[in-house]
Length: 183
Ligand SMILES: [Zn+2]
Image (cartoon, rainbow, N blue to C red; front, side, top):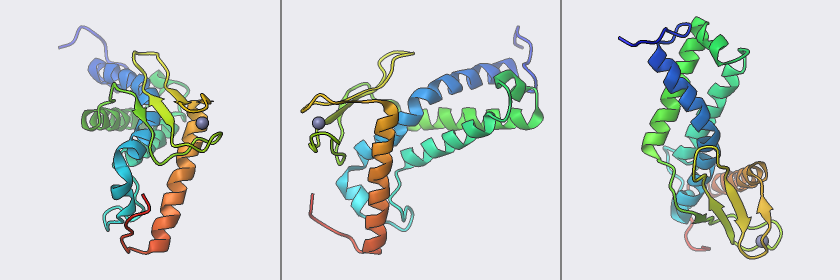
């Protein structure tokens, strides 16, 4: 048994993990969106499969699900308020599980990456470098190595969304035909 009281409908352990998941989600959501773009590589993105007809990466889908749950959690005034509600506590457990599972599958890599397939908006080079957070509370650093233009996470997210939309359009246009080359 734990020394701590339950928090609403959550056990102390569930509550602790939920708090951690909320903190981590701030880092992992943008990372998962980008990680899909980095790791997917040209081949994966250009080979439409029946499982992922839109070519969306699993990391992207995980980020979407975590975002969706965190939107739902905003219905309550704060985390404790959510824990005090049976439905809120369920959402909290789901949210915790999503974040923990996603992090177990795709640990945040500690090395900076050159971002492929995304061109710098300023100099049009594929020269954007992404550095994940290096410690708790750190932020993501995204900058072009060519023209030194820095991107905020929001700007970069928008850029990634544009690229993803473009990929989806391309795959629809191909209609299941595998397109090679043009790399
Ligand atoms: Zn640039």
